[in-house]
Amino acid sequence: MGLLKGLIGGLSFLTIIPVKRVDENILLETANHMYFFPLIGVSIGFLAGGFAWLLLNVFPKTVVGVLTIGFILIFTGFHHTDGLLDFGDGLMAQGTPMEKVRVMKDSKIGTGGVCLTLIVVLTSIFCVSSIPQPIILYGLIVSEVSAKFSMVVLARVGKSAYRGLNTYFIDAMHKRLGDFKVAIALGISVVIAVFLFGVKGLAVVFSGVVVSLVLAGISKRHFNGVTGDVFGAVNEISRMVSLLTVLLVV
Image (cartoon, rainbow, N blue to C red; front, side, top):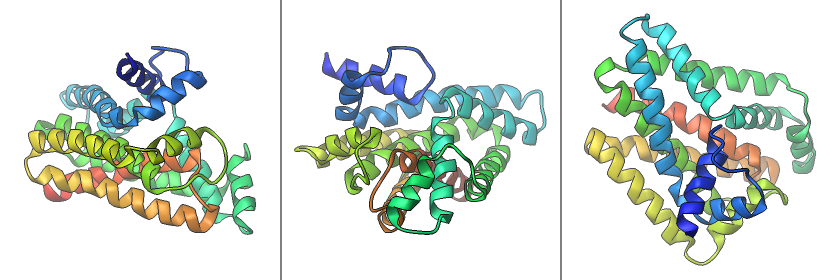
């Protein structure tokens, strides 16, 4: 029953599907079963990929890229995009780590956040526009799987900058069996990637791992740890890097 609650909680947490109201109990179940995130990435990528494939029969590729990334951002409730905006603002802020965290938590949007988000979103749009129609479905599935797996890795390697939403996931992944949970998420991601793209799919998955490790290091330096906004940022940036990798290796 806990496994089912974890999967349903992850779906509610990562998308706008109103499967269940997210409360503290659901967050705990979701965090304890975070290794299901790559499976939720499959569902997001499948819907986005099917959407893109259909649109490519009607619209120019650039329009399809815009609409597809728009679809993903709307379907995920703009949660991760908001984190990316705040992450960019925090990086550009001057001062101590706590002062940078306060900037991230501020409701105002600064130049750093806007510029970083524009770079990530526009690059993602042009990547989708450049992926050939025969593999657009597979490409979007694997990129979403990679993005969600990168969040699992971040929770395992990072430490919490302060008590908040992020703490549920970091604490869960630092408890006993944390490495085993990462291994499960890795196994799910690798099986999906290899099934769709063969050995080349591994490069897509591990590009997300690199992003999560880099952002964990940057967050430790700037914020003394990982925040909820960093989780959002790692999802968005990992998707972008994974799409770039699809273009490079597939």
